[in-house]
Length: 640
Image 1 (cartoon, rainbow, N blue to C red):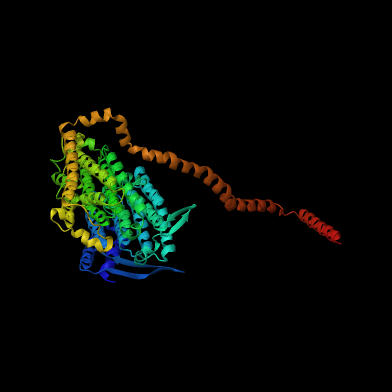
Image 2: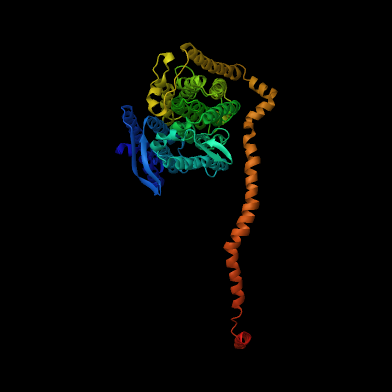
C-alpha cells in the first residue's frame, strides 16, 4: 500500500498524540504541528484524487483486526471515486479551520487541547471515509462522535456547552443502536463485513424476507432501514435533529468543521456508499425522500425567526442535509454527494463568517444587536455575501448547480415521493434565500444597534481569519463548476466521475422542461432575497408587526415547534424518574448494594460479636470449654 495513502489518516493521529503530550509546553505555538500535518494530509489527498482520476482504484488490507470463527475483519483502505471526493472535502476544510482557529482561539485556556481535538476529529473522519469494511466505518463513526463531544463541550465549565456535548453524544446513540443491528444483520446474511463482498452479492437478498415480531419484511428493506437509522442520527434529520442546533454552544471553528462540512455529512456518505443495498428497497428510498423533504421544510421554517446568528446557520445545515437525503432517496446519489461537496465550502464560510462577526462584537451572537458592519468589516461582508448567494442558489455559484441537480432528479424520478420532494424543495429554496439574506441584512446593513462599547471595538478580523474566508469563498463559487448540466452546455463531469461507484440516473426530460425547472428554483431564490430586502431594509418595522399579528405562529417557530420540550416531557423526565425510582433504589441500592456492601457488613457485625468472646477471663474460657464438652457428650449419647 502506498505510504502517501497511509499518511493521510495517520498524520493527524500522530498530531493528536504529540500535541496532547507536549502541546502545553509549546503554549501559543501548539498549533504548528496540527496545521502542518493536516496540510500534508490535504496534499496527499490531492495525490490520491489524481491517482483515482487516472483510473487507479486502491482496495487493500493493512492487517487483520479481528479473527473469530467465521468473522474476519481487517484494517484496510478503499480509495475510489467516492472516497477521493470525501478526502478533498475533509482535509481542505479541516486545514482552513485549523488556520482560522489560530486567530479565533487566541488566548483561550486549553489552546493546545483544542488543536489536539481537531486532529483527533480529522483522523476519525478520514478513517470513516477510507475504510473498506463496515466495522472500520463504524469505528470512525463512533470516533467522530467522541471528537464531537470533546469539541462541543470544549468550554466544559460552561453548563450549556457541557449539556450540548452530552446531548449530541446521547441522541446519536439512538440512531447508532439501529446501525449496530444493521451491521449484525449484514454479517448474518452475507458472512462478511467487507464492502466488496457485501455489495458484490447484494442482489442475493432481493426477494428474501425475514420475520420480525410476527410480521414478514424484506431483508433488504430491514437492513436499509437500520442503516438509515444511523444516518438520521449523525446527519440530524427528523426526529433526531435536536442535537445539532445546541451544538452551536461550542467554539465557532467547531461548528464549521464538524457541523457544517464533515461529521454531519457522514450519514449521507453512508447511504451513498451502501447504494447497492438501498436500491433493493423502494419503500426505504421513498421513506428517505419523505424524511428529507419534511426535515428541509421543518428546519427552514425555524430558521426564519431565529435571532442567534449561529443557530440560523445551524438550522440551515439541517435543511441542506435534507436536500442531500432527497437526492439519495430518489436514487441520484451523485447529486447528493455533489451538494455535499459544494455545501462544505459555502456552509463553512457562513459559520466562519459568523465567527468573524462574533469576534468583532466581543462574542455577541444576537443579530438584533448588530447592523451596519459592512463599513468596518468589508472582507467578512463580501465573503458572507458570496456564501449567502451560493446557498440561495444564484446562477454561477456552487449552490446553484448542486441544488438544481437535486430538484431536477426529484422531479424526474419514478418514485412516488419524488414530485412531493420537488415541490417542498422549491419552497425551501425560497425560504433559504429569505432567512440567509435576513441574516445578512441584520448583521451588515442598516444602523448599528449594539452598545457604544461594542461600537468602539468594531474592526475587521486579522488576516489569519480573513484568508481562510477568502479561500472558502473561492470554493463557494468554483466548486459547482465541476457539475455544469447539459442544458447549460456542460457535460456534467461530476456525474461521470462518480458513475462507477454511484451509477448515473438517466434524465427523461426535454431541455425545455429542464430549463423551466431550473428557472423556477432560481425564481424562488430571487423572490426570497427580494422579500428579505423589503422586510429588513425597506420596511424594517414590518417583521415586528407581523410577529405580533401572527404571535402564535411566531412563538411556535421561535420555540422550534416545542420538540425539545416534548422530548423532555415524554422521554427525558420519565427516563430520569424510572432511573431514580427503579434502577437506583431497587436495582442499585436494594440489590447490588445489598450484595456488595450488605454481606461484608454482616460478616463484620458477626465478627464484632464473636470478638467479645475473647475477653481474657480464665473462668469464662473454662465455662465455654465445659459447655462445649457437655454439648459433645449429649450428642454422643443421643447417637448411641
